[in-house]
Image (cartoon, rainbow, N blue to C red):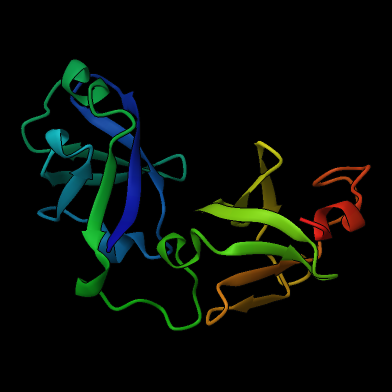
Length: 176
């Protein structure tokens, strides 16, 4: 199973650096000079980290063989991945690959849709739920996501009013 460590963002300066959008809580253990990553799409990689520095709170990285702005810009949107089986995962943490495909249910039992992603954020993570043909982002905090049942593959949600639909009719959804 692939674990996304980061996504390549915008090119920075002229010498091939890119800013990374991190998907890990421990970047210092994952992103360092000589670290190698497989990529999605695979045609972009593998990539080897040449230099790393912090720029305004974000990691600025240069990859071997990408020494100018044009080469760096071509990497924008590429995901840096590792094999989840090769690293020690935090016991009390949740990862996107563990939650994607789970059913999202309201605490009252109403089916709200399917978990489609876990987006790591600076302030808090967001659970992306596919609901009524759109994506709803739910802050991944205990007050709003009080329970995750791994065995049943269900995420219970207690969203604030209006997050899914102000006119939400649980009786109509329960009948489906």
